Image (cartoon, rainbow, N blue to C red):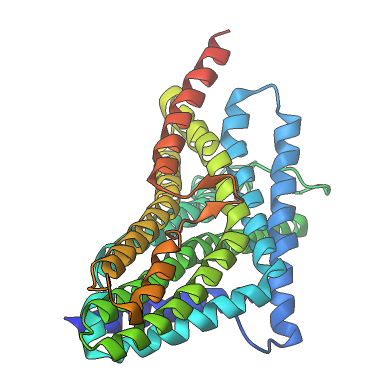
Length: 387
């Protein structure tokens, strides 16, 4: 069973690497100039798409129908731009975090005893990640395919004035002629932006869960070493080693806060609005096509899963940190001067809590708060429309 989980983990890690390498976002020690350029290209691609959609929002600000159709996608692209920017600014810290956690986890997978311990709840982690993967993939795939399907249907019906629609409701600075080069270039640009959005959304969000899981694995290892060492001299050595290991994990947690703090804060602020907008379309708009219903439903599910991934990961880390402190407290240390100082130092350390820009701890409470805010925004939007 443990061998199967190791294989699944390696497959999962390899897939994550393959998705991030084309974007230049997989941490490398000595990246080439071309590799660095790939990561920088994602910023204008995503930000440019958000500007085009925001221009559409500006031109149709008096229509709730057009606002609800475009505002959620615009916010998603702005969030994607923020994710890339955070990784580019903190690329050295991201490299340290990746090398520290990944190398140690690889060593743990080679230990037969550790395999059973570190892969607890791993199946749940993989299940959440795959569900998230498919919802993001279906949503963005349907968005890209919708204009192409529409063109094929019009062609088969021999429409005289065929309408060539784009992937998103957007307004670009240039004139887009039907089936001209301007349309083709714009469609390619939006398609590339969609691919970039998929890779960034899928991997950056999943990478947070991936790093948290690796920190939890080390906390479980530390708890196991402490509780299964009986010799006083060896226990003293294990405790001292554990103190330094915990300091390293604390530094890793601080790096995660530095990179993901603005991202989580953005998700807390925007996901409620985005879900509210799409729920409004689902409940209020009449004559929605099946394709539009699929997009709305999967988009809402994507945002729910995205919020849950961050909130659940933070709660799991804090809970495992508390279990580690309990393991330290439960060893036979009282009256043993050889190990007492080490135990007191370890018990004085605070449990690990990930905070979003020192604003709010990342726990399941964030998830419930976002859902409540979504409901509040929906009723507010409904009231505004009635007035």
